[in-house]
Image 1 (cartoon, rainbow, N blue to C red):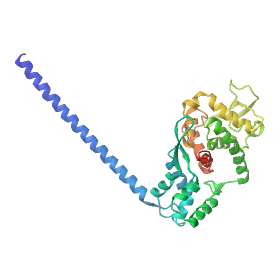
Image 2 (cartoon, rainbow, N blue to C red):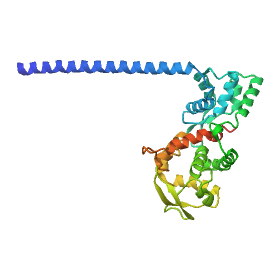
Image 3 (cartoon, rainbow, N blue to C red):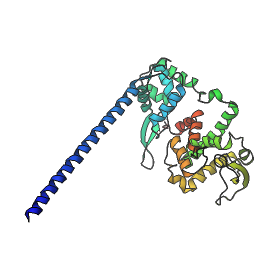
Image 4 (cartoon, helix red, strand yellow):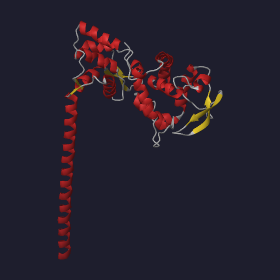
Length: 327
């Protein structure tokens, strides 16, 4: 090998080593930066967990958000049960609630089980079981149950709720039928009831009154039953005439709703049937194209509207019932 070639190879090795050291420094620098950012985030998160929060102005929203956060989109907790326990622990003073305390109690409600298919799933333990474990004496247990009873009719929409009796009646009718829909098709009761309210305007739409179609299911080529034509709005301001399915009863509408979703593969592909939380099922419906409703900016808004409605009327608590451990 010639001297010039050896000299060239030496320079090449030194250059490669220099590049290697530079890359190593960059990696170390990036690692340090990531570690610093992670530390800042965790420090902020920990401080928020232990910091006192005044929730007296909006306790319902706080506990709804906490119930969803603790459930981690896997299982539905009751915000009322969390709040009833805290009203005892904090002696009715909700001016210094700590998120860490709420999370610790909330976790006591969650238990893992193995279903018939051998899959590990999350279930909800009963209120009585949890208050037995939090160190309450008999007087405190009685008080917690009293607070829970007092919260029975409380919801976010309570102050603006018009025609409350009629709306409560509609929720009761659909919710009672929604449990069978859940057992058969795994559509959460909150989604069934929420969609029925949204699509039928609380059972007051012409389509609902004249055809018992409370979900706005269209009469596509797979439908062999009766049909009705209705003026409808597809997007922000589009108006069209479309054919919809006609049913003999609300029960038939609910049954066909589950069947319709199951038979259309796009809903399975969007993750509708594997979702176990109302927020993820609502998003799956939007992703699959159940509705194409958009705002004036052209953004899809069906999932957001459905989620907000479910929260306003405590419909997520229906999911809490079907996910509770059967004693």
